[in-house]
Length: 503
Image (tube, rainbow, N blue to C red; front, top):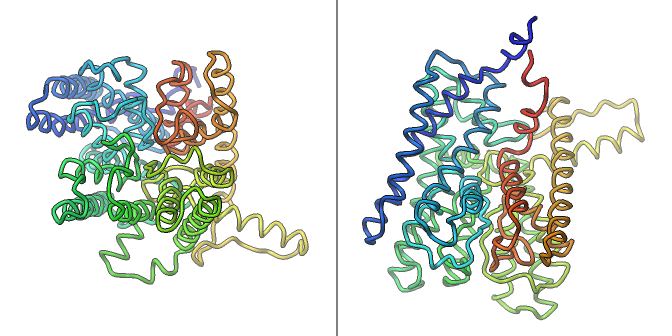
């Protein structure tokens, strides 16, 4: 085999064609903030120009590489990885073109764009409320797209190109096993899209009702739409500098409920809500563990801040539950500045960053099902140490899990921890180099937050802080961690393998 033939294992041209097509469609999303800009009398051209640049470039690439392609697993890794990089660039363009002094640097704008489309929620912006409303809604809408919209868009477009889209769904909503809603990808895309939109509309309607009835006068239609866009995808951007602290307690409890829903497997939600199969939810081991960990984390945080006289009564309950749920579901919203909370509460918050929600949800981090399977593997190893002759298959929801899947889970967790440690070390070293006040504990929290797509960390990157003080190197590093976390490490690590490019 010649050197050239050896590199034909990956159809790069076909992958570029698909990425170009997806970005051309995605560029239409800039019409939403453009409409908001028209309504509020703000400048429209940054969004129209961004859409034109992205749409023209995407269409040009698609036309230049057109042909009959089929998306295999190898190309799926490349398409997903490139799409997120380019989508973040599209997210950054309106910030740069607007000339807003908080986001006019390309590195900062790209960080914000990646934070949006990766649904991380960490921000480089110091004063959020100083941004024009059209830019605010673009930040929010980019997270709604990043949560699941961009993948559903891919699933809707790819069949037209005679390209299978199942790999994209598996890479975006990864887990050991993804329960398909239908054997046809188009049906799967349609059902997930409908459920996603329906939850967004319901939440928007509830927020509007709270405003209209005077329960929360600050939750105006603008803020209601903005936070509906970012709560369902468990994202974290807010139009207020102090996040949900600016709104009424009732609004915060509603947000808690929908953050919990956003962390549940969408396929399972569809079966439970639409098909009316509640037994499916009751039998699901991952869902039970997910809810149990939410309760446990909330109890620990509430107990710690109450007994240490940080907060008391229902205020402590609401703040503790909100913070625990927001962190574990990687939403990143806040109702209190928890930087001053006791050590155990802070350690619990960092620990919850590594849990995440269910596979098939919009959350980031490791995912509950992987923790569940790892626990089952460890239990089996202990049992087989005592009884080496016993064969003990690992089961999930009464189904035997393949050994290959169990090895993949273990490998993922090892990779995840390794990248987290390297990220924390690099951030701490760079902070020492630049004279930035960043304690080791803060560096650990920032690395965990970025990789898990949580958003706020501790210290200067806390719920009321900003990542603006970090150096350009650290900003690029944090952007990379968000990208790795959103795609759950494996697709990007695979691209760095020499064997990926060779047959």
